[in-house]
Amino acid sequence: MITEAKAVVFEQPGVIAMRPVELAVPGDGDCVVDIEFSGVSTGTERLLWDGRMPAFPGLGYPLVPGYESVGRVSQVTNGVSLIPGQRVFVPGSRGFTDVNGLFGGASSRLVVAANRLIPIDDALGEEGTLLALAATALHALGRYGESRLPELVVGHGVLGRLMARLLLALGQREVVVWESSAPRREGSQGYTVIDPADDPRTDYDLICDVSGDTTLLDSLIARLRAGGAVLLAGFYNDPLSFAFPPAFMREIQLTVAAEWQPADLARVKTLISEERLSLAGLISHRASPSAAEQAYRTAFSDPDCLKMILDWSSH
Image (cartoon, rainbow, N blue to C red; front, side):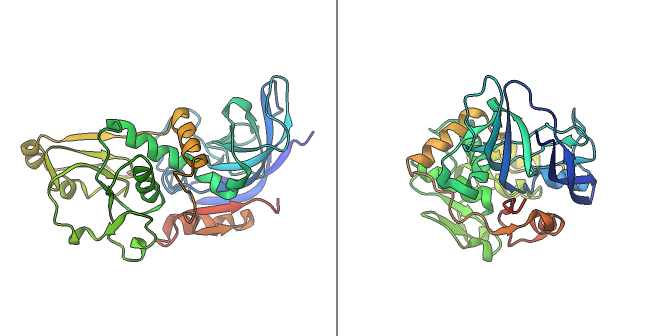
């Protein structure tokens, strides 16, 4: 039985290596998955890289990052209905003995409980790594129910694009996205992307911010109608604050969306299979795991990088 894999390891904040790691012995209900692709998250993984992730159980260095992986089942144990060769989405793994698995998906091979694996269509390929982000966007859109969907999305990164595409899939007729960077205003599909300075509206009912910009709250509140709401669906590295009087006068609502749930991912899969949601055109950068350090630095710092994918085919 294979007991070793190659993995991306954050040895400590700011120090990355591509090196062998020891796999746990699979038990009943586990699968071994050979990874084909893994995505780099510019939210949570950046905090792990910078050493700013708040302390919680399981956090410790050295660690294997990643929770957006796609691979094929290579081994199964008792009680598993999946079959070898089946392509699956892997939301991370803790199946290592000599490093921490947080979130444990950036490895050539993983040991994972079968009930955590999501079978996906072969045709998705590398785009399958985007399922977690799409489910995150869908989860946020459900915070007020589908009878009250955002009219404005702030940020045209990969999460903002998924949000806009999902709004159209859910029946929203007009979707506006704000993006201050001119190059990032390219690539819309059926929705409008504009510079915030060119938008005169001050009567939005629900604004969804996915920019991660901690300085925007006051400007967003100023664009709401009385009783309007701001939905925070980005990931914010620094504390958020806002001026109270304008929020008081409008009697606004402020809501935070957390991570996706299994039902969100199942619905995203349905929308994709029904061809109501496309994941095409969202992966901008690809790299070999052997170039992981530069790939992660690019993902975290290059404004032209929508989504970085590591291609594990050579490993």
